[in-house]
Length: 127
Image 1 (spheres, helix red, strand yellow):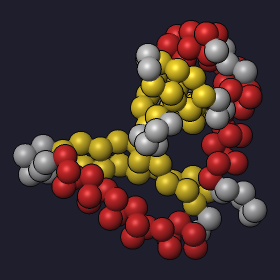
Image 2 (image 1 turned 45 degrees about the vertical axis):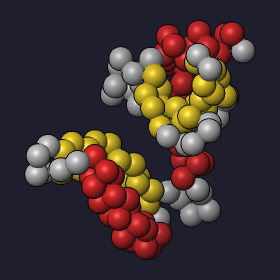
Image 3 (image 1 turned 120 degrees about the horizontal axis):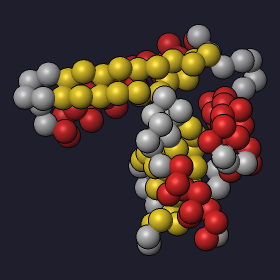
Image 4 (image 1 turned 180 degrees about the vertical axis):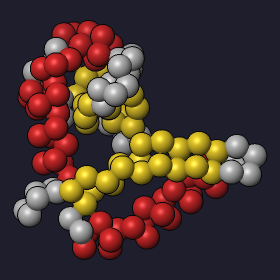
């Protein structure tokens, strides 16, 4: 299965799940996706959000708890830094990925990437 088709299927599934997520106060994170010649495997992780919270609130709280463990300030969530000529925004942490635990979003288009703690720490020090 080609990447474009797999991406379209992933997006369609997310759209179809939207009313279910709203009904049960959940947010959705795609945690894994693999495809080969004719197979697509997607794994999703759901998190419950409390009444009045948003997905951003949940991610920020999670970041504030985990950031000190990786040597970051609690307020680093949402900070923008530059790597090369590209700007990225810190969007979360995934400690289960010790080599690349920092989740970032490219500012210009919102595409997500994973970075090492060293790379992000160095970029934040440069300002």
